[in-house]
Image (cartoon, rainbow, N blue to C red; front, side, top):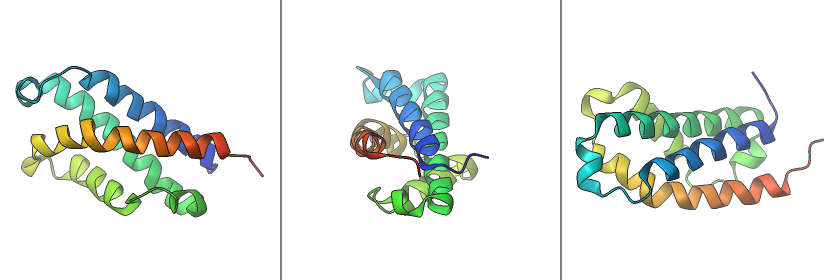
Length: 116
């Protein structure tokens, strides 16, 4: 398992960019009935949340600069383990409102990164 912040930042950014591509111009109503789209978005949000969770362990100085990192990791855990009670409306909101803001933060952190 990599332990460098830039690796986790890249994983997060790639996953978030996939999410943006998947939900671009998709109305909420379509998302709520498209199981394939839901699965794709959920998987990418899981990857982003897991990468941030790993960053909390191995590069806490970077994770501390991610707003609501604890909530992001908790949301990842719901996606991974709470699928029986998953609210697809909340996932769509995370994908369309929260993920783009997080993407900008991660882009800034990645530009500032200089390995030790």
